[in-house]
Image (cartoon, rainbow over all chains, first blue to last red):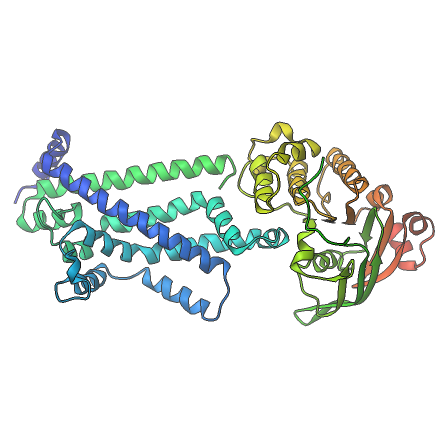
Length: 235
Length: 243
């Protein structure tokens, strides 16, 4: 076990030297989490918009259920996906277990409720402001959904960011369905868990630094875009 | 300049309202309201606070369903197709989070209007030089003119105005009024809710005076301002409190 100072020094030099293993892990993490975020946004924003503008029996129950699913434990999602993708499972024939695709599926399932619930709230608030004007324009439901999604685009960036943050930081689901296989399904969080358990803190810390830097950079970019939009009164 | 063609069909005037009632939250806000508006020009709807002016406008536009009575526009009962042939400008403009031009484009696209009309509409409301600016950053008067351009982009046969100049400066009010007069001259029937007696004198062809959800008086403008029939209208015109 290295002492903390030595581990930090080694971590910084690993990042600075552009270590091949480190870069591979970082790129796979980004690929999995960004793809999951994009898929979640496609499904979640649409579901959120539909929930925001429609009224139907049981709507409140659906909203409560979606909100509750925001707290879905990643290991439970991982387990459910594992059961479906394992050889004995209904989707076992696809041979996706222990692949990045399985990890994307797990993360998508994990963060879609987050994107749906948060976007529903954002879009419902906006819709309450626009509703009377839209009724006056006699817009169809499709036109209303498109208009709301476009006008709330900067607020929805924050929603997507919340989803990405959850995806990139989670370890429980991806370690179950990905297996943490070196050069195949090893991502930052699973690598940190592994290296820590081995007592090799340098790589774990280096990955931790990169993880935090990515989170910070994404937040800075999204916040910058949002502030610019607010300054120009588009948000 | 021609706005996009409205839905075809016989004219929406005369407007005939019979026995109109509206109860919300257990309170009767409008009851037994009868009204006939025909011909052309500008009808001003006046009355003290709480008289039901804005509610009447929303009922006439189909945004609220009445609890009782009938509204017929040119013989057609209130329906979505009637609403499509009208436009309503609200007291507080609800502008999309987009540029001035994009706000007008939105309505033109939604109504399948000619996108090339946008420039003419902005010119008509005096906002050509602000087309690229964020609509929500404009002054109150300019925002209201964006709302008016959008309303005109629907090619309405009837233009409903709910105190659109209530919080505007005199220059903006003057500009807005001249656009409305011009619009009425082009054959659009205007129903204009206003608190402002001076504005009503400047704009009205006829006046509907409401009190507690009923039409107290409906007369040509000159007759109303020179010789109101009721004490309520006289008090209102004299600036006394009408409760």
